[in-house]
Image 1 (cartoon, helix red, strand yellow):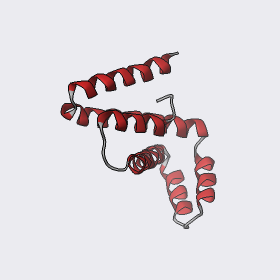
Image 2 (image 1 turned 180 degrees about the vertical axis):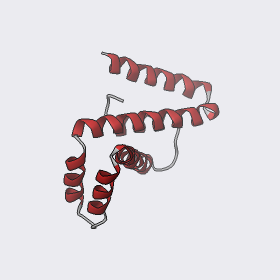
Image 3 (image 1 turned 180 degrees about the horizontal axis):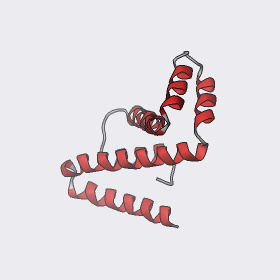
Image 4 (image 1 turned 120 degrees about the vertical axis):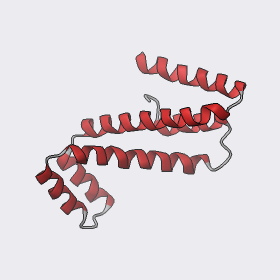
Length: 123
């Protein structure tokens, strides 16, 4: 997902005819992806580092302090890579679930949109 992930998700929801609050869905979807990426990274830490991180996180920190703690253990690049991997996997999982209920027109429009994302990613 080279494009802004929220924009990609909102466009996808429009194409498939999602009728509920698209912004809310996108925010929740991306928040879950962020959480999963962070959990995946935590699981890769050695036990002592993981326990140290968990102790720091349990102190009820502000959002800014949490970001500082996260940066202490993981590079921005590593977190970004983990987030992209989780988001792409979750996005494709969602597409696979809704695909069977889409009309032929929706499928066609979705395929065109996904093709444009794929070509933008490779260029």
